[in-house]
Image (cartoon, one colour):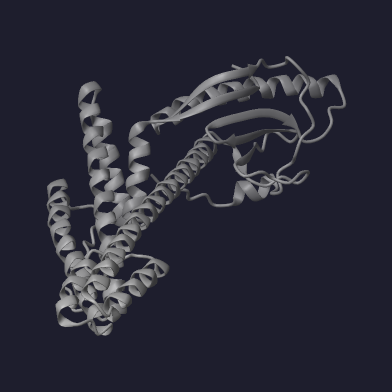
Length: 356
């Protein structure tokens, strides 16, 4: 081991899945209980059994995402229904707690898909007929016009909707059947264009949602890593601080001190999945005795780091060393001092709970 290290952090797949599930279920007590149950079940599994259990967790998480997607569609259709004052029945959202069986979620999604398809079709037809009536199209043209307009998606952008309506108005005002038929073709073309734009916008929103989900998952993993490292080293007798008095702290920075170390500290920095740790001095070394004590502290730190690695592995946080500096290889650099005094840190109650 060494007094300076760089390590790649790899989270166990069970932790990643449980963090994702927790985000989907929310931060309530029910979500925490579900996650704890999942991890406990996985901890009891071995080899192939554990892989099978993890696959079940991931399958359940995918089902939760499908439920969330349907709930969002129901809300969106509800907004259109209220705006248009349309009498179209909609399915109820599923307010899940995480206690529902996987089969229940799948069955609900299938039923919701059918109900949503009926609602979208009924809403489009009603809006199409309404537009044809508002434009005062003759009866023989109104039916054809309403049928074409019923293909306009409910989430069409206002600009496209206005373009379609403008062409539909020319159908209603046409003085001959030939002119009306030509204008109806134009309506069809504009409805098709609007449909393409809707599909492109839906894909853009889907990509945006996926990116937001990725960022949220990365943030949840980062917070888990920092909280787990903090608690682990506190259990090993260190005080952990996130502020530094001699430079601006960076996101993901930790400073580890001990009451028996008045002159030394360990700075940790988490960047993405890379953890860097380096022992430093909080004030200049003035004698050979200072440097001898530095070497002793470095050896103590190396032993603590090895112990921490084992504890962290139990919490699904694995470290793969990519670089290390042996104790005594170079003099300790002068670095930051914790903004909190050792006494304050020692007396401050710690009631951290790992959030999965």
